[in-house]
Image (cartoon, rainbow, N blue to C red; front, side, top):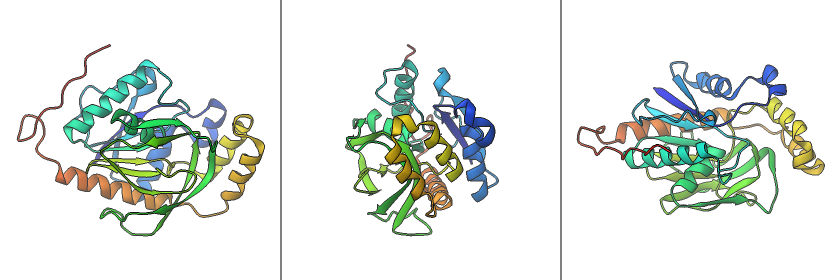
Length: 255
């Protein structure tokens, strides 16, 4: 499987030597489960938006320090590409910012949560068991770092898991879009350093809570197994590519 990584941010320079950049994080995590996976990276934050939904087998969108409502031109272009993927039936997994962008692109709403920052490890209930959740477990605990949340779901979405803090934590749209508010690619060491770097923004009390939460085990490997099973099923169930029995996705207009 070839996965197109839609990179929407860089790791802060002061943390990059110790933790690498986001593409390296994703590749290291996913290769623990399937070493045969290939990744191609598009630096969307630099305006490098793919022009062909069929360039890879499936797509994955990273997190970002940016918000989906920031009004940056590249975010609007990426949002349009997400809609292309939806129409084309192409598999997409959105992580944090990507989860929120997916919701916004298809008619949902994203806003800064009145509950403040989510940092450290988040503890979530899986409220609906999907067939790609193998092996199954009823909880999903992942590292988080976010202030925005999906406040209103798009009509195509259903929530599969969440918490009182973040009700729309895990969502599926149709059979080929999956959104995850958490960061399976973040190590606990990176989470700890990121909280320290953002302490003035996040607040001392919330950072202390986040640091304490990191003593619990994270379900990062399980989430990757779920993601890969979701993608394999989405790929196998997809109708013929454009030009065959399926219908071509509309092209984005430049600008």
